[in-house]
Length: 515
Image 1 (cartoon, rainbow, N blue to C red):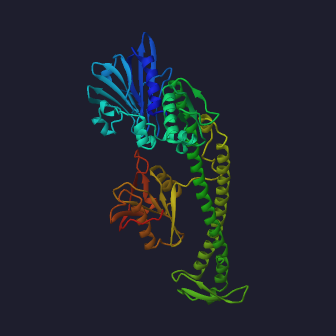
Image 2 (cartoon, rainbow, N blue to C red; image 1 turned 90 degrees about the vertical axis):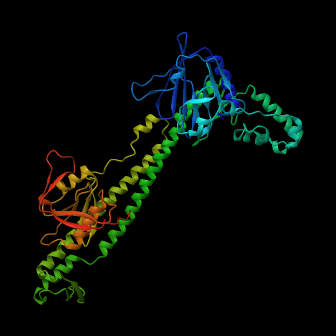
Image 3 (cartoon, helix red, strand yellow; image 1 turned 180 degrees about the vertical axis):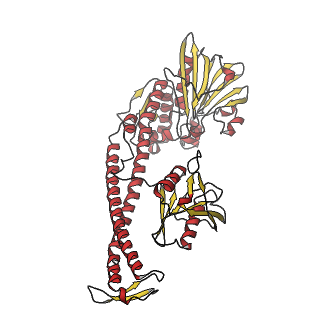
């Protein structure tokens, strides 16, 4: 209700008494949607701060205001040094203006998310604060005036429908009418009630009503016993603005942080659930070490270039089908299974560690949500870190990890992390890929000992290199690849810049990666 006509009417009366004869010293903006008006008279300074945000607009009257040395802009220079002759409320509208004479008028249009401050020369708008509101270029001050006629005969004809007479009352008055049972009154009682209300609105008291989680509201009626009251409209606005910044904005910030923490918790819990499922799959999978032992115990019965062999299990004495790589010797196949067993143990260990880390993070985030409830000011909120400390030994990897045909494919996350991936994590015999002649992620394929990287794996890695590059929107992309030992950092070049030798080129479609 702080921008309601009946409140602004009281504010205009007060401003007219206080500001007549004051000259405009400067008008400037140094924050989005905020305008500062500095006035002076006989060495005495006055200030108006107009905060015209799309979700909340309000005028306040600070005792002092320091202009920043940078990032501020002067506005409305045509009225600098001009004196305010009067402050005029526009009839039945949420607007008023400063009259400077010489045909200059500065309009304060307090129309909710369309609030604006406009300078008029005569009937023409010559400068507009919120220029995005293009329709304000064509309004006139006289066009905002509205006449309202209120008499008994018309009141009875409209059956006491208050909105027909006073659209300026609007929603802020609905609570007041409901509280007094207006709909249940007779037409005579309704008429007397409205007459009494109009009399009160000529000199009302101002209250500030607060509800947890909502913006504080200025009202012309006491809505609860705890509501503080004010006789001065300017003081009421100052208090309202302070509450908005200190309490409502604090609650909004706390809610934003709370929601961010809850999202982190949901994401971490989903990761934990999937990781436990992965652990179960690994633990239930055939023991690769046992398969390797079977091969080594039966070297004499395995013929060269076999892709599959039936062996008798040591423990169950049942036949077991064992897959073999026909291009490898039986011993090399056994070593391949031993390596898979070692990798399986490492994977189980890593997944278990990551689960414990995430569970610690979830615990920390839940504790932070509890701490949020007791925070009462922005200083305390700033001291609460919403990012938990990394678990001991935990390090964020500079790459995304993909798997294809049992090969690890690593994709750098940005220019700095491309450097880390290629020159810290990649080994000399790993395969390096990068989109040709365009910015993009470094891609590294981990080479397996004694094995060449299959063509299908190289193609998949090239598709990922194309996907994570500036050419990801093209139908076909050229990608270069070479062993990492032929990649060196460009001396004096930016992060991620490299020099590649002995490269080959592959033409691929960018990969489709599920988010």
